Structure formats: structure tokens, C-alpha cells
Length: 140
Length: 136
Image 1 (tube, each protein chain N blue to C red):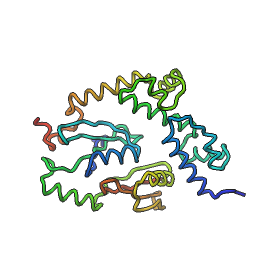
Image 2: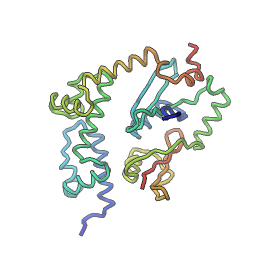
Image 3: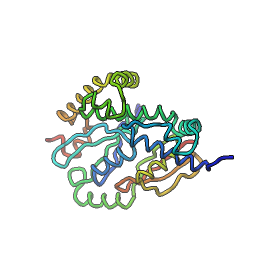
Image 4: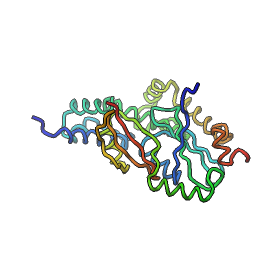
């Protein structure tokens, strides 16, 4: 017999995902999330995967890498970003980042900063001409 | 031969508020954010899995695109929820609905089974409405 209705577990899993989205930089104990949701770790992981297509741990890693991209694009140092998004070691962050993106964090950062500089220097190179003209930006 | 659409515009009342809605609530990625002079900004975002589709968050303001009268009319129409700009897709509609609701997104239709799949309707911070779907 199920202890809790399916809808409750479903909503609890969505909340767990939101918890990861908000607390990715902390030392999140995914086992604890399952405990708090009052269902088994196995059941939690299985339900999470059925909704989001990855295990809670894989999803946490995904969020950390995606957030690290934003911090890197803002010009933060690689070491700062590494710890800010919740990694304990610079080498594991760098290795994982490269496996996921094909670039080291520093290479990714240089690419993004170059892009931002190019947009700031020549914005019209990044805006379809028709819109720039309609907005009156082309004549300036 | 046309192969793809790579830019589409959504008319918004306030770009900063639209940035918060599309990036922080919907989870879209900023593509291009260019200052074009005082109070003028070119801002585009991508849905997470569509890096080659730029959604332009186009401010409705007086200028060459809209004269003063058209701009005022357009703002009223957008606020009144006249425009539906498209259909977004997700893998699990119920979960996405619960998640966006928790983030304060306003839905006018909860997940509902339709002939083609499941659909919900939500509004952005300006009043534009969108369908959010999951294929069967």
C-alpha cells in the first residue's frame, strides 16, 4: 500500500528540483532531500528521472555547470566560480566543465568576453538590419 | 529556400521586467544584450534547447517603429492580453506548470488534455499569452 498519494510525491519531486535550482552552490545532500520528502532514495531518484530525464545528482551537476557559465561570462575568476557553484576542487570542476562543453572554463570565459566586447563595440553587427533601421539606430 | 527562423519578436512593456520574467522565471538564456543609447536596448534570449532562435524582447516605445499614438495603443493592447505570440514546448507539462506557478507565473488555463497533447496557457509580465504544450 502506498503511504502517500502519487500527486504528493510528484509535487515533492518538483519542489526538490526547485530546491536544487536555488541551493546548487551549497553542499546539497541529495539523500537528505529524499528523506525530507518521506520516500525512499530509490523511489525519489526514479520519479525525478521520469520527470526531468536525469537523476537528481546529474541534474545538480547540470545546474552547477550552467550557472558557472553565467558567472564566467560575467568575468569572475575560475577559482571563484568553481567554489561559488558548489564544487570542492578546481581540477574536478575544470575537468567536468571541459567534458560537458569541450572548452576549459578559461577558454569559455575568453569566448564569452570577446563576444560581449564585440557586441559593445559594434552592436549593429548583431542586430538584423531591418530592425536597426526601424529603430533609427542605423543612421547614428 | 527558407530553412529556419532565427529571430522572433515579443513586444514588451518594460525590458528589465521582461528580462527577469524570461531569464529568471522561464529559464531562458541571454543571447545578446546591447546598449543602443540612453533607454535603448537590444535584448534577445534563447529557449534553453534552442540556441539558434533569438527571441527579441522588443520595448514598445515612441520612435521610428511606433509613433506616439501607435505606441500608446500597442501598450494598451498588450496589457489587455490581446496577443498570443506562440507555443512553447516542455517534456513534462504538469511539472513545468507546478514549477512556474511556484515562481509566480500566472496561468489562465491549467494543464488540460487536448486532441494533440496536453496544453496550459500562461501570461508574461507584460500581458502576452503563450501556450505551453507537451506532445502525447
